[in-house]
Length: 408
Ligand SMILES: CC(=O)N[C@H]1[C@@H](OP(=O)(O)O)O[C@H](CO)[C@@H](O)[C@@H]1O
Image (cartoon, rainbow, N blue to C red; front, side):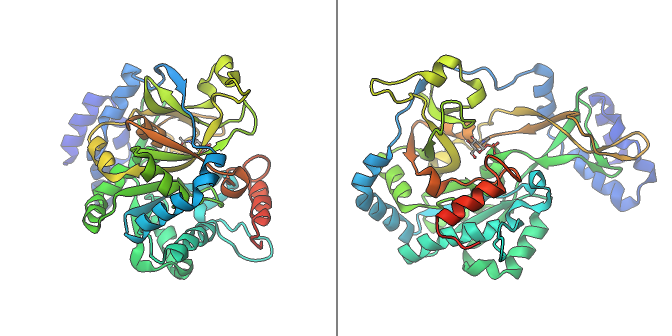
């Protein structure tokens, strides 16, 4: 794209602020900026204009989960089905690690956070230790895909290499970068984070499959005989990655996908609940639930919307490929977005100042025809590190790690 092309386009889009500093840039920076402008997905901004939001929801109904008692009664069989599939190389794992540890006051990839007390124990290390347990049990390496982002690819790859992948076989590790989406202020103007750079951020955890496909990994997997993909968040240090009973249960169920769920700690716990929406699997966020829904009980006195997702899902690869071309709903999220002002000074706002565009993995569940909710024990499988202290924090995760016999 030439400068003149950019002027034409940006005049038409009313976004000429992107060229404010153009004449002060080096030729290389100019070229970079033009490439970024060329790459803008304008349809995102159209969503903002048309207010075509994702908030309109259908009719929710409860979806019963495969509960612990039922799983325990059948555990040996489920594990065998799962281990067999893992041994045959049919189940890959995808770690969603595009984010930084910003909320922990840590300006590096979240997985590089050291949660140890008397020794070093990194979040990545916890996760790799967990998957290694399954690798040993199955006697086979699990293809392990790690999603990073533009912001943390270099740090992540260098760190894991330096740590020798915490013992994982590097041949089975593949990195890819999450796609980025632009940010806008409240007037819909695209923000810049430097004179030669748009403000871009990872496009939400729903972007993982399309990002993976851009690297050709979907084809690589298909050729290697992979049939299932698990996808899970970096923040849960007790994450049971490719837990054989979970894998076996989803395969046995004949469903398109599955999700690990925990019994809610209390009716108002702030988690998304796996349910159905207009007859298809869906996740209703806690803030979308009416008081009625929150407290509805079955004849045994159990909450009907009782199982919260922990961001550990399993998807059938063929089904993912089928929905690949469909656009996921866009979530418009208010955020504090650092930007440069008209004089080129970097401003770090302390209150939200604009919108980011995100697609969410839970919307992929809704595109599937069926889903198997699989209950896991909170104390053994759910220790998300979201905040420094309090609920879902470094502190609470440390306690749970210790309870599970991990030396800190
Ligand atoms: C968009 C998305 O996937 N949100 C997830 C995710 O929430 P955050 O609090 O936004 O990290 O993790 C939760 C479990 O820790 C899960 O309940 C929720 O559905």
